[in-house]
Length: 266
Image 1 (cartoon, one colour):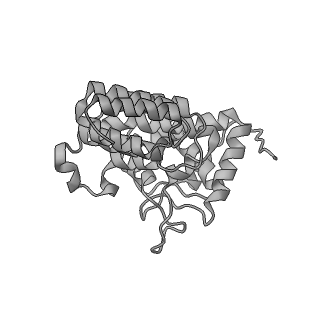
Image 2 (cartoon, helix red, strand yellow):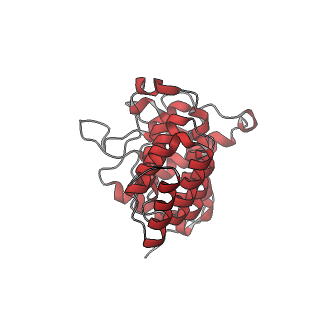
Image 3 (spheres, rainbow, N blue to C red):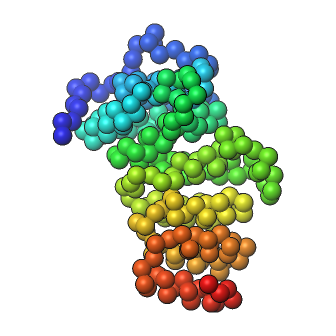
């Protein structure tokens, strides 16, 4: 494999080549010295080199016709340059401080920005870039609590998926082609689950087989068992998750004992 090497540490473009059509995202006051905006411009420049236009006045970022080329470009770049990887993650973190920017990168995009064809979101493609996958998974999970109070109880049904940022974030993790570090990802997901509102907790639990796959079943079963003991209201989605996991004989026995303990019959 040929890796890309860059001699210049800075990737910032001339100011005339990147002019957002809307105001820069709001960032914490401690970053208002321009560092965050510089990081966003560097991140946008890296994406542009792979054929992706971050700022699209029509909606979500405009992806290249063949997003695989974007992922390959980013994978090679970040594998060969720790500085570029750090710049990109810093810029992306600053960019999604704006709720509107976060939503844009989470909703599906058209390759050209036009037409009815549906494609994956920018975040979905970035999660398939191995060198930054875990960083993005943790970054997105840490954004979830900011959107816990958007809806409550049964009122979440009033929001479409594209307007429900918390559900959009969870959807990015479903059916990924690979998970670089399933243990660390699962541990972080467990931390977030412990503080989720009930409606979102049920949705995440029910989606665990699609999110984790078969890569960390022992950890998942142990975590779900703990959740049932702590919060019996989640037992139905937990049992649904159990039924959709491919378990070995030992884990199947553990699940059967758990079902018996709570008075359920298979």
